[in-house]
Length: 469
Image 1 (cartoon, rainbow, N blue to C red):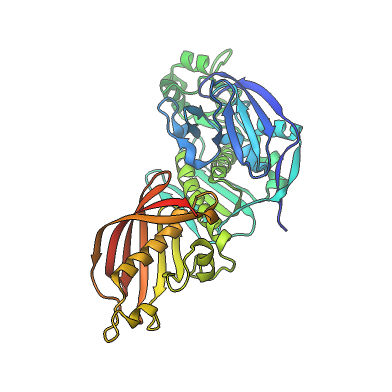
Image 2 (image 1 turned 90 degrees about the horizontal axis):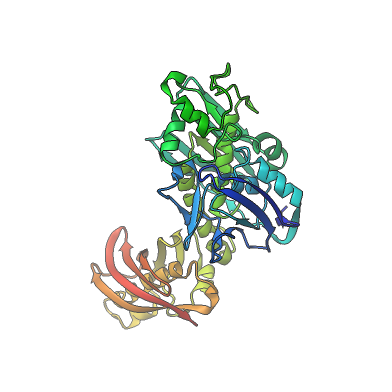
């Protein structure tokens, strides 16, 4: 059964200090309409800029190391360290929300997602009329970073599960794993309270980078991986706001702070991953397996999910029936392109990467009308029609992401570097591959190549304009 979108009943706020910036900040969650998504804004800036919680807006900023948090930026507005907030939103399955801040970073609370969860639950979660949209994992998607030893995989599943393994090859922590199999049953009690953590040797390094200005032992677990004699204890005490002496606890944690769960670090890494992946733009139907994830790898994988989702969106819009090896059949193509017989020159789309690349197929039969005159005794497909077939294939790609597609046309403005390599005869299967080279507001440039039996028969660079019908 399809679930409906959700938002909150009323606005709710709480205040605190940003983990890295150290700035005093108030976060306010506000209800939002259907299909609005998750959006951040800052009340302390003169210009109101709404920053969608999408991986498209993730940036690395020199003042805040993005490996230590996930940061968003749009038109001069930066929101730092959003992953715990987004983990709370994703874990509570909220789809539409305006999140307003009075500074550049949310209050850190206790270093977990629980303060945000409690605020959202206090506001109350309500259903809306529109159905949820999902990123449905139908293929195996993977990411690998050998340097960091990171692997993330998404597998098909008609539900959502996420499993994380961490291994820092450090006796102070060792290997841990954790898995979440039901957001509704497990998230609030078993994962939202898991706090952020770091190693003792990292604290001075983070301070040197201008980070954790708002950090303390109340919002982070510090795992001792070196003797106290090797650190600047006065500096650590001041930075982590410790009253009294600094010592290594029996549990290997600074000042003997107790873990909330035996595997709390692994649970927090799962929490981070959950928040970062929500930047793909929709909840996931699939199984996520991650080994040694971090913010950098999480964001790279979220980008892949985002592209996968965008492909699915346009496919769902035009393709009624899923056919193996076919992205768009002829019926879907007719919903996108205005061309009709005898000038529709693409039969199906077999590969599609939104905003990047598309592959179409045209079966060139002996019944094509142009063979009657080109040429009656030696039929050859006209080169200009091969280019037109490439252009129509590219037109489908260019219309992706355009508002009100049904009211738009793609007009070609110029063709450069056109080359015809081999003739195309009746019976051939013409494969057209187009790659987007440059895109502006209303104009695009792409490179097209046409193949028969794997051999290049024609190529061209084409400039096009997107206009009103």
